[in-house]
Image (cartoon, rainbow, N blue to C red; front, side, top):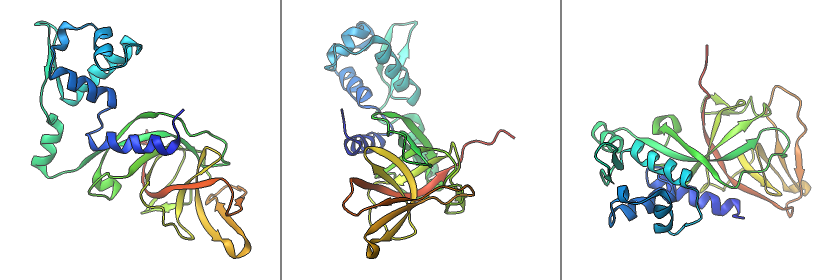
Amino acid sequence: MSSLKDLLRYGRRCAIHYGVHQIQEKLLELSRHQNLAELSLRDMAAGIGIPKESPQKIKHHLLQLQKKGFLSIDRAQGTMKRASTTPDWARGLVRRSARLFSIPIVGMANCGPATIFAEQNIQGFLRASGKLVGRQKPDGLYAVKADGGSMNRADIHGKYIEDGDFVIVDSKDRSVSTGDVVLAIIDDKATIKRFIDDRRNGQVVLKADSSYDYEPIYLHPSDDFNISGKVVGVIKKASRD
């Protein structure tokens, strides 16, 4: 099974390619040499080196490529070909000088006790304006979905981390100091907490920042934990009011 570090590296590569999944990249490469319309879904899977992959998954990725503007599918004429090297929405962004990021969503992080395992796959991509993220480039960024209310007083650039929000983490920024909000991995479990460097007392503290009463997590500096990155933004869940 892939480690979380491998997963995040994979997610960053996907984000660079406009949110194109690795299978989608392989299908696009295959389309350079063959008319995909002449191939069955199983033939396509074999053609990209994953013959045991389910046809439904291949179909899903074909439809995603069509949706993103990379692949043109004409069922009436029985054609399926590359539409463009750069998808329509990306060309439009260049014309408007706007920035729309595709940030890999990596599982779910518990904002309470560290009891939810980080999922070992990318669940999808968060399409968000760079202005919301506060960045000009998505390099090193990934998103986790907050589960719980133990960080509902954590102010990240004027936004609070509430249950169901997407939390944006910079995996390249691990030079954290006391007071920073981080995503920590403890025994392969992910949690969002405020970092307290208390090594003068022989400990590191991961503290909740909440209107509820949560106990801090106390760690020895030599314990098996990793700061996977610093929280740099919050994308709020849509209001239904």
